[in-house]
Amino acid sequence: MTLTQEPDFQDATGDVFNHHLASFAEGIDSIMDDYADSSVVLTDTERYAGLNQIRAFFEGFLETASPEFWAAFKVVKKEVSGDVAYLVWSAAPFVLKATDTMIVKNGKIAVQTFTILQR
Image (cartoon, rainbow, N blue to C red):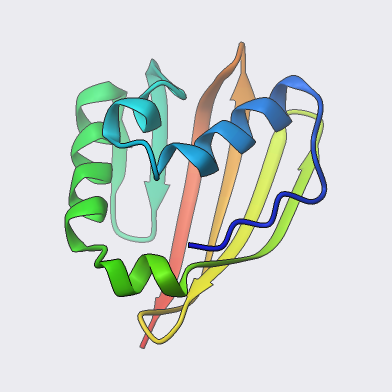
């Protein structure tokens, strides 16, 4: 897995963003540390609200991500502006391009959008 650490964001949003990226190597409990009961994840097909639904979403994602997927994972772009974090990534040939946008409030991801373009 390739995670670009530059630029290094030094504010609260950047801290949560960087933790979220690193947490995939640590497992589901680490991922869930970034969310609150009031958090929401929006995709093109579903709305996941609250810790239980968000956990189920990420468990499903992790179950389908093979070692080859993680070897191909690359961060294309990372940006933080105020309480918004934006990520573009790929894992070709599995995922051609994906984007995540996160709104961080009180040290947690309050809202996250996720869009993926697969082969």
